[in-house]
Image (tube, rainbow, N blue to C red):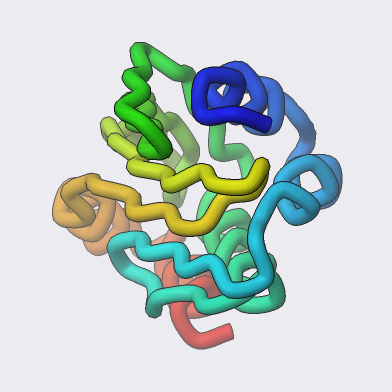
Length: 140
């Protein structure tokens, strides 16, 4: 997989059911020493930690969808801007995300997700029915 091919691979993976098919799609693409960084979660070092991070994310947002809006490639670096939507508590939550990936040797070597976690946190705090999922995702 090249950096130029990755945006299509990314979009195809996010269209799959979560977590099973999603993880089956992405985990083989991740280098064994990759580091994934994302707001509200500890950094994930290696495939097992990345798997755990996404499983926690899908505990919090079991119906999470992502729509790619645009992407850019600069050498081995790929930027993908997306809109995410999910249900938290009894209502919807939406937030934009920009992911930066480093692709080398056909694998994902690093991912850093840029988003503002405050709207999700404030939404979660205003919806007590979502508190159990917030706690399970964080302390699983």
